[in-house]
Length: 151
Image (cartoon, rainbow, N blue to C red; front, side):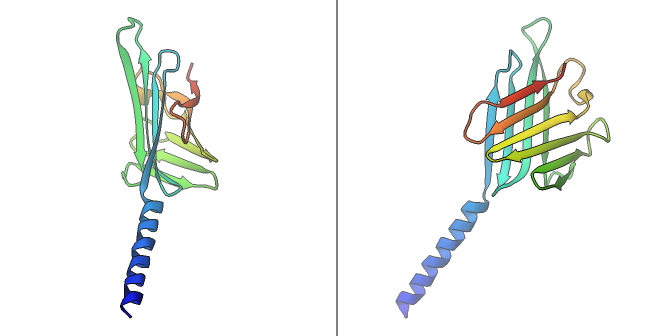
């Protein structure tokens, strides 16, 4: 009887550890120099579900030694964004953005996550800095992929 109790305890602990590991938050990140305009992206996952992101980009100033920064982040629990999940996409409406139409779309394709910022007002970053229109993070790759910048 004692063996059975110990066996059940070990099985219960094993199941708990498996569940905790499966659903623990995981952070993926990438960085890229992008022709003198460094870009970085971090995505937070809970299991396979995206629960947050953080983007930052630097734009060189005309006088070269200075750079202007632009950052954008959202999390499902922040109360400042509204998340709508679709089959392979997430549309995030930013409640605190410059425009009531500010939206980020995340598209998942296998191990890659593409963030599309085309519906983000450039005014969120100020007039001297810029934000990427699209940036892709591929799990396991340290460099951001397919970065498209605004003209």
